[in-house]
Structure formats: structure tokens, C-alpha cells
Image (cartoon, rainbow, N blue to C red; front, side):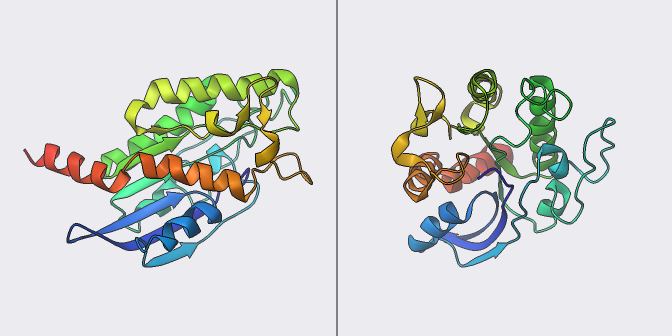
Length: 220
């Protein structure tokens, strides 16, 4: 999950309406949704190792030492699919300013990039959800705590439009992934059981109905 995996999901039928759904998320979550019969087509364009700056709008000019937007898979590209709903999920890549001061992102950086992507989606008339960080084992204690602080900041900033991917799978003792949810070979990625838990977090948001509510509110 430390890679950005972008999935364009189209033709979701709900209440007599077709939804187009752009999901920045992992294969396992989308596969679980597919088993519910809600998703007709999935275009998986996952790329390992990407970070928040890669997903920024095509017009954005990053500060020195930060990646340029990847114009074939950033928020601008995502919106070109004309989705009704966008989910942005950056789990932890480069979220280690203590262990890697030169490449690790600060809290203001992370929040600025997430806010910019959400603003871009909202300006295009799309509902946008932001997922929180996720725990991992290979960061030092300070950066594992930083992931927790980021999680709180995301939930506080985005409110209803934030999805908590941290608390359901974290070991509260040391901010690592709980043992039953780990992939032991890499100390980074949640396993399939954890993906199921995260999928349920998305389901609990009732995202498609949220899109309807937003549309009706804007219509009035």
C-alpha cells in the first residue's frame, strides 16, 4: 500500500443512476468492491513508489527537491475520466521527516498537497474523499508517531470526507501494523485481512449515497 495505485472505476449502478468512480487505492479494496457487484469496469494503473507530489495538478510547480506531477496519472488525469467520486490515498511514502530529513515530507507539505488535490476535484464538481495514513514497521519510533499525527490532522481537516485507514489496523503500543494484519516479509504493507478491514472503512462511508446527497444539496 505504500505505492499509489490509481483505479478508474466506471459504470457503478446505484438507485437507477450510473456513477463514475476514480479510486486512488489498492487492488484488494477494489477487488472486494467488485465482488459486491457494484463495479462494472476497473482500469488499474498502479505505479510503485509514488508520493503526494506525483499526484498534484499538472499546472503545479513543486519546490526544489520535490517531484513534478506525473501528468499521466495525477489528479488532473484522474479528473479526465469524469468521475463522480474521487478517493485520494497516500499511505506513508516519504512521510518520515525524522529518519530522512532531506526527502521526508513535513506535516504542512502533506496537508497542502492533499488539500490541493481535494480542491481540484471539488472545483471540477466532484466529491472527493481523503484516506488517512497507515502504520508501518520500518520507520523509526518518531516517524511512526508522525504517521499517527498525520492521521489525526487528516481526520480533523477533512471531517466527513476523511476515511480512517490507521486506527483499525494499528498496534497502539508502538504504532506498527497489528501482527494479524502484517505482511512479514517487508514490514511495510498490510496483508489481505487488513485490506478487507480497510475496504469496510470505505463501505461505512456510504460514498455513493454521499455523492447523491452532495448533488442534491448543490442542486437546491
